[in-house]
Image 1 (tube, rainbow, N blue to C red):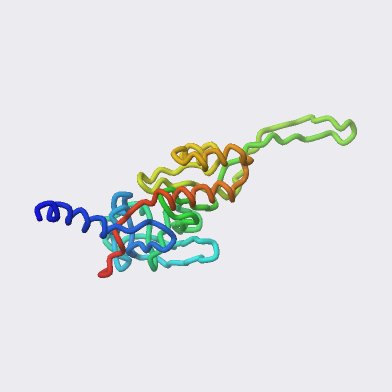
Image 2 (tube, rainbow, N blue to C red; image 1 turned 45 degrees about the vertical axis):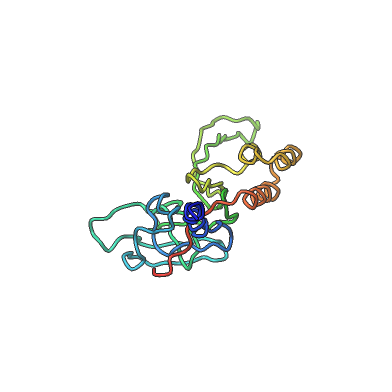
Amino acid sequence: MRWILLVFPCFLVAQSQVPLDAAYRFTDGVYLTHAALLANRPEVDWSDIRGEMVQLAQDNRLQIEDFGYKSGDRTDTPYAVALDGTLYFFVQADPRRGFHEFSGLQVVGRYSTMTYDTTVQMRRLMKAYNPATGRAFREAWVERDQRKSVTRIIDMTTGERQALDQSTVARLVVGESDLAGALDRVSPDATAKLLRALEIYNDRRPLLLPPRQANR
């Protein structure tokens, strides 16, 4: 009987955790830290947030124009938000257009992924040519902003974000020899196969999190 009493609490703990996968639902609200995300306990309710929200379901994005807190003394940058159980990570604030942008997850699990557009500064050498001789007579480096789509892997145990590429995925799945071996034979730009490797790894090694809170 004593043995049963000692094991029973462990059983209860196991039952209170569920796998993080595409069916997992986060508690709605605003998360300020990764620790709160792992606990599935948002620090701020939506009722305490001001701004106009636009959910771009087709692009798996969410934008909040004029994001802010109704409490005047709070200025925290949001870490992530959950709406209707779906999680969106904060990726950037656009001061020109006045909104905060959040990106949803594509692959969901221990190693999740998200894709979003960002502005990068490109530096190019521009040359002016003499039409008579065809020779350059003046050149200068020109910097221009350019929109670029990027995909990031998120280690959901720590919150670390990494680039989606062959070397990174191979390092993350090194504990699964068949996946690591298969990645050695794919081209570096085989994005679909990299995502599939992460999905298989997540299924084999699920991350367990607390279920959604029903009272929020």
